[in-house]
Length: 331
Image (cartoon, helix red, strand yellow):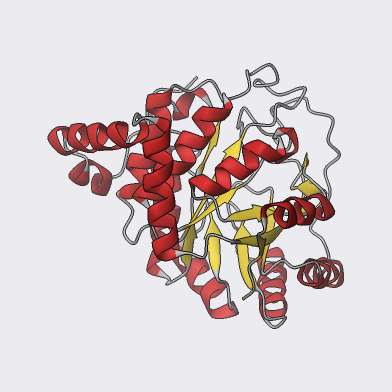
């Protein structure tokens, strides 16, 4: 694995040793509360800023699949891994619009397009994506993209095309990052997030739990997110889906209460954010998902696939919300 990447100056300026220690202690104190107290605090904050009976439905489409040069240890799309995945070229506009219309008809209010690229490159394919953004936005949907690293002028063009949000996860803590990825640094990720923010696009940024990281790594990820200015509007909390042929294929499943504690802590630290219960839901019981909603999660991705990993069918999600007396959020 590569050596630990250097973090940008802005991060170092904020996270001096004294401030970092104080922040870590604050977040640990939240996380380690007795479970009833933690959920009560999270639910109280959640109700102050959100309708606790609503969950936003989002749909994530893989508009370009596989053949990614990054070596992310969790990903089936990496050329460095041996997952059984057939690469697919960039989808055409008509197919993307059909998916977006179907997502809206199924109750989704945000449509996200993901391309397995290391970075956005100026040229014909980026122009195609910009047109996708324009036409999906015209459907009266929130539009999100996750396309890899961005330069400031590319972020500005996406903003002008009507992009609502850009997803660029930090994945894990600064200390654990180089155990998962060596082809892109933490600084690269933070620079892209800075470009997105500067363009006036909402930041969607979270992480993945269950990659062998410690609880402290999870809390340090949240600590890093608190240093972003402005704070992320959207925070996806993913649970690793172990994929055969990847280095993490035998990773142990995260303990359910650790997941709930992480979501509750996220809600307390980010009162206004949409906390998205993302990958790994197919392996979760209805009871665990309900606890996650009580802890402050208020968004899920619907549809049979989440990029390349399986996901609950929309009918199951609708049935669960109906059982709980909850409903999909409207725009």
